[in-house]
Length: 184
View 1: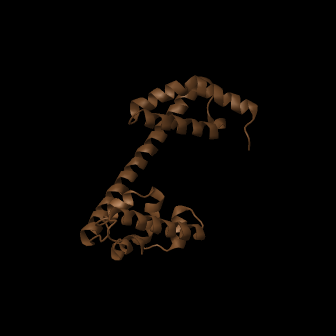
View 2 (view 1 turned 60 degrees about the vertical axis):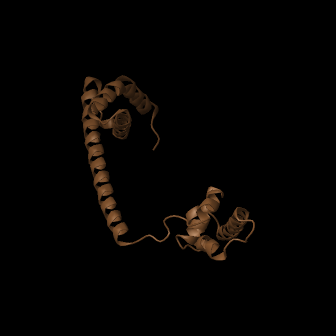
View 3 (view 1 turned 60 degrees about the horizontal axis):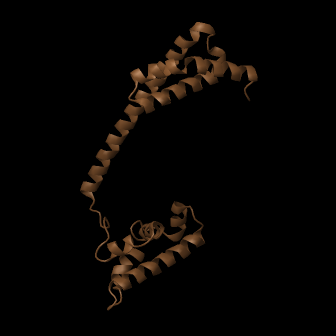
């Protein structure tokens, strides 16, 4: 349902008249300007959605403050939940890392510098294949490509890596096992 011209005009007048007061209210109670801006936006979103419930005249500002108060409480609860979740995930990750050694945390030998010379897309496709063990169809899903495109890009990236490794040690061809570590 689209807003009627009188509704739009009423909302614009409400915003023009009270947004600075709501911003001041939010600034004095929030974590900073960005949080306060979010509170103001959410407060006026509620006002827009419930425009028929917004009192007329001088009663509108206290009503907006009440909405802003509830919005702030919701923001604080959300921030607390996010913090709690981050702490739990951090503890779980730390426990997993302590109990499971990572075998491919960094490229070994000449592979690391060779990978650094490739484009970020080439590196990503090679590492998705080698470290994450993904097949081309799965790589395509991760990178937003078609399956055939992922297969051809993987093949070309492997070729570029082999050329970079050959250039690093021109007297000897790249060691096949080292290349297979990344390009299998």
